[in-house]
Length: 298
Image 1 (tube, rainbow, N blue to C red):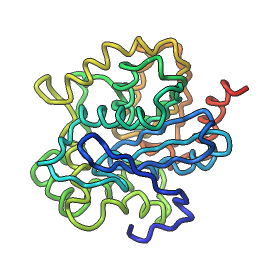
Image 2 (cartoon, rainbow, N blue to C red; image 1 turned 60 degrees about the vertical axis):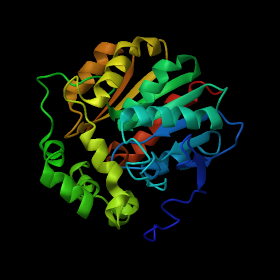
Image 3 (spheres, rainbow, N blue to C red; image 1 turned 180 degrees about the vertical axis):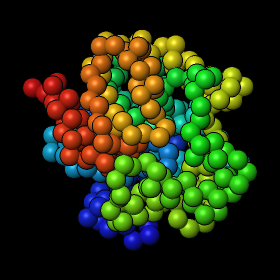
Image 4 (spheres, rainbow, N blue to C red; image 1 turned 30 degrees about the vertical axis):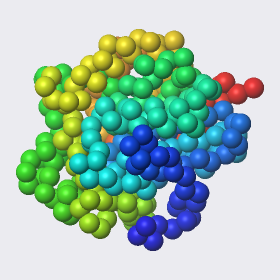
């Protein structure tokens, strides 16, 4: 895949067949009997985003990180065979978890769309959830007075959609806009590698942007609304936010909304990190995740 160095992504490939037959790639590192931690990515990243967390935890933990269908190393079905909506993503996550960890309690680490998807699954299965770490994400409907960032607004236009689909504009621009510091070129390549090539390689990144619900008639609105109504089912879980302050998507207002929902949650606020908080401050974020998850280790 576009010559991605093993040094950056030194993990064996695993594949799960969804109910419709589409293969979903996932990382599965560490002892199978280790306490499972599931890492769910957003748009336009993939399991590569969690590489440093996996490397730090895999000695003791079973580290599981899927690629959403149409993203990362997963299959690229066309729209006649796959519904690129949030509801499908939640169903996919549950189908995969029912195979890889059907019985044990799992810890969750989530980012961006991964938070919305994983929390939608979690409120339906609270008994299967242990600790939760949230990195710059959301899982509720967007207030009417909260403006959509310009980059996302443009991505939803005809021209924006054309540039994303034809020229990988969303994934490429994200490596410049989603961090507070300049990314190492090899890392930037790793983040964008699965979306290079023909337009079908990045259809999912476009559909994710178009699926952002702005009004009740949008398909994802009902899923987010249902999730929002039941986030209290997770209120007794140990929860930690690690939040990049320089996020052009999820700003302090979003974090304040989270604090109202879960006032008991820990918050680690990183003044010098952006939306890709794991890329801007990998050492601090990885240690923050590891320390938080260690609290349940014997």
